[in-house]
Structure formats: C-alpha cells, structure tokens
Length: 115
Length: 111
Image 1 (cartoon, rainbow over the protein chains, first blue to last red):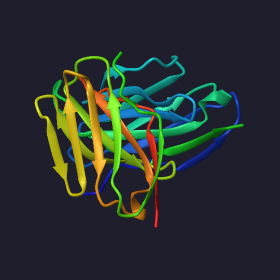
Image 2 (cartoon, rainbow over the protein chains, first blue to last red):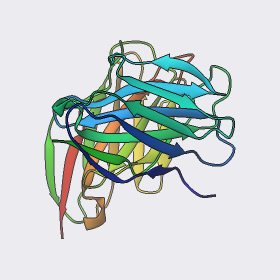
Image 3 (cartoon, helix red, strand yellow):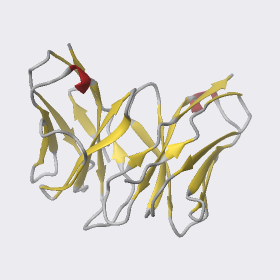
Image 4 (cartoon, rainbow over the protein chains, first blue to last red):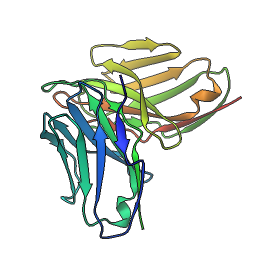
C-alpha cells in the first residue's frame, strides 16, 4: 500500500496570505489527523476528521480550518498567515473506526515558511 | 490534557551500544506509541503498546509501560548509525485519536 502523501512538500508565503495543504491517507483509512510541529511548541494536534466530519479539534485559532472529502483525502487551510505559523505540518491517517484508537501513520509533512 | 513527556536529553552513543529513553504522562491512556523522526521529516511509527500490556518487542526495540507510574521506556539494542534520529512518545486517550506528544529525545549514534 502507498503511504500517506502530502502536497506540497515546501511552501513559502508572506504574512496575510492564506494557504491550503493537502493530504491523501493510506487507502482504506478513514481517519485523518493534522499536527503542527515547531521548535518551540513541539508537535501539537490541530484536528481530526473521520468520514468527512471533524471529530476532534486542538487549541488553535479559527484561522486554522480543515475538511475531508468523501474519498478520505483531507485539506487544511490557514488564513491570514502570521510569522508564527511557520512550521512543519504533518498529516496522519489511521484505520480507527468509531471511537477506538490505533496506530497513526504519518506523511512526510509540508514545510511552511511565512515571510 | 495528557502529555507524553520524554526525559529531555540528547544521547550520544557508540555504535553497538544500547540506548534507553523514558517518557512520562499525566492521565489515563488507551495506548502509548513511539515514533522516530529523521532530520525534520515525517514521523515513522515504531511501536504501539496498549494500556493492558507491560512490555513489547519489535526487532531491536523493547518498550515497557508502567501504568501505575504513568511511564514508558524505549530501549534500542545494538544501535546503528541509522538509528540517529529524534524519538517521540505519544499518548492516545480512550475514545479518540488525538495524540499528545512529548518533546522528543535526540539520539546520535557514532559509527
């Protein structure tokens, strides 16, 4: 099976712009989660989608949003970018159904730089 | 919220030696997972241990879990240069997939 893929891998934006990141989960996985990794805050949970519904949300401002499509692919959007949004954004997929927890498989990440 | 927290140390060891990392957490968990990350790339899943398990092995990896002490350890035996990476523990609560990560341990294996 192909692993989790994320596009683009690198992105440079300026303050005030918006950005959309894409994630394709492992075939058959219906749960997709997003994480932000920065040197200062480490790995932080953004949100999780399951069957096109947001199931969990982390403590991030409303500028961070996401969605999931019927084929389980997911996108996250960050509007009005700030310098502090520079980070590695990681997507993870899981076969977990319902409310169970299982191994999450991560993609290579999208490195976002905000200038 | 629960938080996996590794002992914040950087390990530098010779190839062939063993490396041990520890992780503590604060609340009840469903499982605990260990991941490896090379040079700011994606996370590679190493091993998952459930709350009702005490020890688990996978190749050169051995993970222990002590739920009474809310702690876990990862042992890498006979280390190789390719084991050079950052290692993270992450806890998963009951009922959802929201992983809480520790700050990571950087391990350098010197050939």
